[in-house]
Length: 467
Image (cartoon, rainbow, N blue to C red; front, side, top):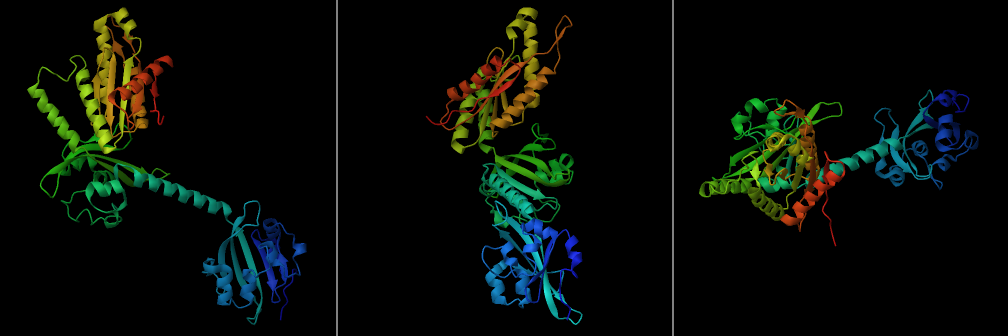
């Protein structure tokens, strides 16, 4: 019977994978350089001994190669490796496992190890070989990825806006609690199931995101949705629409829908995300306001110069949106803007030319707003924007868009001179306990802070919380 020795196992020494070999008496006959580096134990301390356990465990116990030589007694395998042990899919009679070794280094290491029997020419087992690979960094990366995925899932689940995610096969992969409350359909009935929400016929009602994934959103949306489709001013490639849908009870609800593509790191579209907000109450209020305009024509809500809403309407809508934000615990962001150096413009060019600046600013504001936002001229050169259902950070993005676009808009004076006006903007958001005065004062204070910072900028003011 051949005898295993370090001499006839010399090829193992050059193996870059940590490897050791034991003979039929469980003595170490090979302990290669990679194994020395991984374990920190030189081969001279291991060869000829049965102390292979010492590299991995604080007390004496068999390693996987030992168990393999002893015939892999099920009770022993279960005792030492529990569910970590499995048969190798690559080598008959071999086995493998993954385990954490706390005694490796300062923080311990994760190892993937395999053991296989060594046979002589007659098929007798004369030893066993075990390889070890350190995959600690991969484990850390996997753990970090799982943590990020869990955090994203929690954010999606806990957001107060009804949100649905579909993949490229148009199957629903995420359906948050707000979506359940809005539609009355539970996530377990729709996740990974298209037929639960869209019968397989051409007249079925798709999501806005379905049309976007198919590249048909701008051509086919009118077949399924009422209202005007708009490209989102906040997210590239996204769309939004306000539409009316009838319910089974014969009434209906107004929904504000947004759809945006989801892309991989390589830029490939891998799905779409859609949000749904019930704006029925807001539409009812708007309808009521329109009827009020008929009854009270003398109380016009429009500023005659800029065609934006005036201060009277601003006060009414500020009260309404704050009441709605408080009642339904919805986000609300307020922007206050003031034209920089407006007195100097009037003094230099005259009041009529100053009006040109106000009109230019109002046009920029109207171009930048979503259909659900409202803008107002509530003072001489002072403007306000109400953004329901929008957190303050998105409000800062809008403020920056308005500011930069105004800077780039040439305003031609009667004498042919071209000027570029700038504005200072304050941004804040509603916090429980706010009233109209505190919310306005905070945004107004942000505007003056922007003035103190050199003008032509936007400043966000967070509400103070607690005593």
